[in-house]
Image (tube, rainbow, N blue to C red; front, side, top):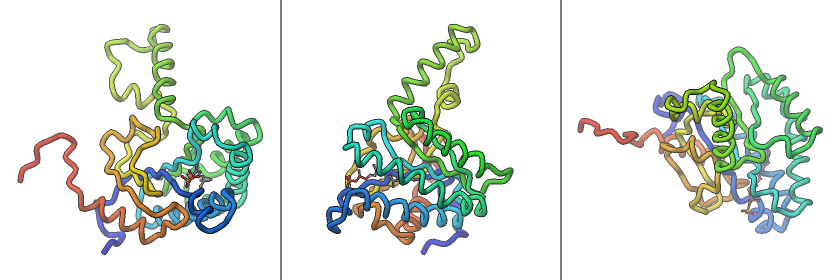
Length: 241
Ligand code: FPP
């Protein structure tokens, strides 16, 4: 079975942590308690990612569309983000895990923005073991729109030559801190992308897991890493058989 010596583990992992709400309902708990349990799972998966040499872990914590949820739930998630930073920054520093938040962060207000900046500054080291990227107020489509606006402005200002725009230009001007996701995992049973990253998952292997996020275990995660290591990734090329 899987062990840390396997060389073909993914470098960059993305996770859509779905099912907190349904897990809470199944266990006769409040929705916010589902999200709380979800944060505990994040802690385990971060630890496993460090252990198994994953370079970056990108988590979908709050989508652009999540603003349509009840205010109480939005507030509970905001509170959890602040609590997670307060509780875990020291541990992340020790483990050399560098935090980075991305998305329309301004919409979360000054208090959360300050907290995020503090967490990012505190956890930057010269030799990070893991880059932990948290999507907050992120939508893949919105990010592409933002890139179009930014690049257009640079073209108008003659900083970029229109004819030299390529895939790298888009990645460089995106707020997403990782260029290429190798493995995307979605828990919760649904088989969709829900506007997560989009541009960066062009060649990602995708694994859909039936379990709700709060039931996702280290064993499940390591099985995903192992299953990924067995896949032949051709990137459109013909390999020699
Ligand atoms: C999806 O479950 C989960 C979310 C929208 C929120 C996830 C957020 C966290 C786990 C907190 C993140 C905080 C940090 C610091 C990483 P859902 O509520 O959509 O589940 P459902 O589909 O069963 O309703």
